[in-house]
Length: 212
Image 1 (cartoon, rainbow, N blue to C red):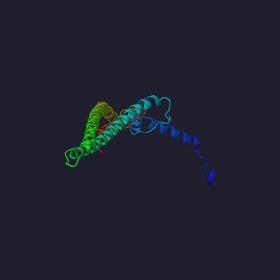
Image 2 (cartoon, rainbow, N blue to C red):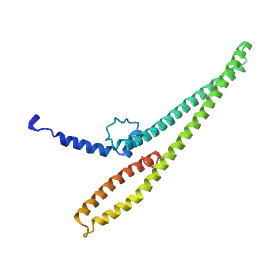
Image 3 (cartoon, one colour):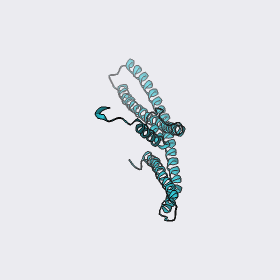
Image 4 (cartoon, rainbow, N blue to C red):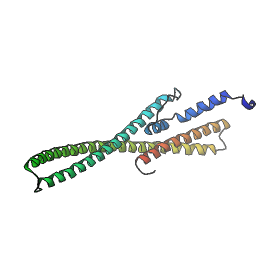
């Protein structure tokens, strides 16, 4: 090995395994999917099903947001097209009443005006349709965010009670040492679970526009 230092592959594998177990939690899977990320199948088999389910739920949210953004872009594009049609219709109407417009030109202008009116009506109908789809997607997104926030609160309340009792037990001098070790494990695991719940809660607040 270079400089006489041999790589410790067992330590590397152990660290990688622990890192994957930290990463492959449902809340992180949800965040990965909601951010448009990809899952490369690296999670341990015992954690993968829950991680993938959460990832798929997050990816549905990502697709929902993409659809909302696409609908909004389409609405803006059609509004611009409507405005352009209206300007042309105004010009055609002005030409129709102009004294130097010939009868033949008036016929052609009337045909164009009719076509412009029909195209404008079609664009306005498309705007209404896409606005309805956009509103429905926003309602679904808000409902999901509210569910996440409520679920996080409901999980955090009993977990705080568990952590509180664990901390009280840790301070007890009459508790045997082996039980002290078990209580520390409960407290450490609870703190980690609480951090995951807080991640979900923060994410739902971001989606609701309460924090940035």
